[in-house]
Image (cartoon, rainbow, N blue to C red; front, side, top):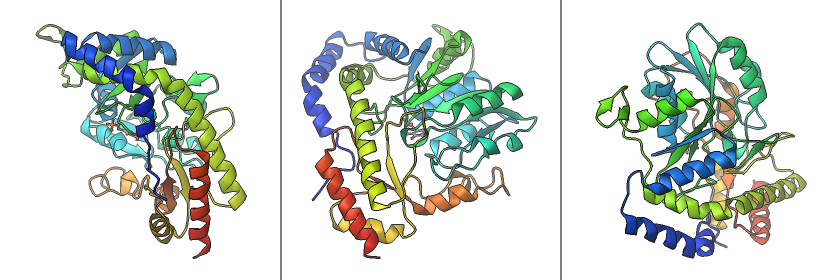
Length: 367
Ligand SMILES: *Cc1c(COP(=O)(O)O)cnc(C)c1O
């Protein structure tokens, strides 16, 4: 058995004619930067999420950075975030010149624990940046209410959760700003780097559009300091083709994730839990084991690839340890040693899932 960790080939086969047609159209018109597909994608994604504005940018990382820049967050400011995410989340806070302040996670969802946030708010806190990890929105009502009470902005890192719902609202449009990534392996992935941010706030949207092109408000008038942060026309064109199948893929991801849930619960294997009233798009399907190294080695032997999201909490990384020193996040530390993710994509089939879980059960019981 050899199963890809993420299967993008079936998607490509299904969408090939549309993708090719879209690419060819861009090659014909030749507007590779800020071509018509950029606006078209932004309009489609704004309509789809319900946000007043969608601004495409060169990556998910850049979306997070541009959000902080648009809010004027920098030196002397603190931004509250989770220790358990891809490094970009803490990285851009530091890159903006601000200090990341870490709040430990919930042991079952691996998302930021809202009960621990208030104790970490100081006079310097400007924003809360929760991550909707593994595709499941975090506790946005609690986080938004806290932010409201303290006059803070919430920026949802929705890099893994585009397509999931919180009540009837879409992830990415659950707070003042939402950021997402179109990295190829994300739920909505292009064929290179890309990202977007969503907001209902006209002023923030305008600032983000300017920052994306070197802080330019009109040609050669640089109203603010910006970055080179545009998303290519070609990548936007590819996403427009991929949107044709995205709603179906979301349904598949939810069904496949729930099927894993059922198989693993029957086998008594610990897994990430989902909360009532929201959906997960299972950007990663993640389980836990106290004997992780041995279990993933046995799975590899059986032809089942795994990945670890994430082996070290961000606040324990060499370049980040000095921020927020002395504040421990024991739940993140423990989970960083125990989590690993199984193959997952919209096109995985149930027979493959049964084989994977059978191999996992064998690996666990051999210990
Ligand atoms: C992927 C990811 C990012 C960064 O996105 P890029 O497009 O790779 O820059 C940020 N945050 C989280 C949680 C991610 O998973």
